Image 1: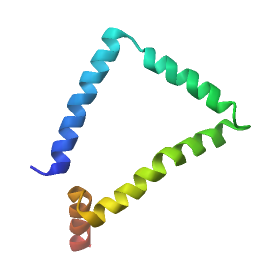
Image 2: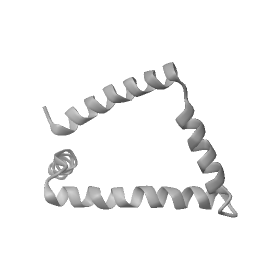
Image 3: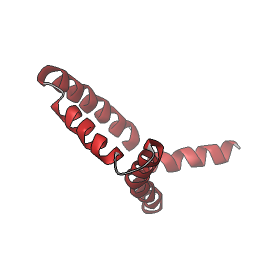
Image 4: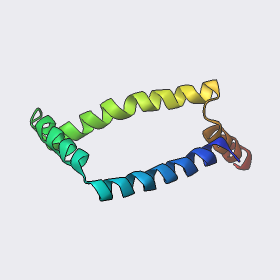
Length: 89
């Protein structure tokens, strides 16, 4: 079994468990996040600008880490997909 398949399986299991826990015990964290983002959105003139800025701040380090992972062997799944596409194309 590939590591990526294993991680996907564990992610699905944890996601279902977390959703069940949230439905059973309440969505307090969601309300806190809504309150935070309501305050965050007031820092910008445009809601679109606020959203793009937040996504950039959150996603850019992840993209950098993903690029690094391909070079260091952390992510075998993306490399295997790229090799398969290259050999078929």
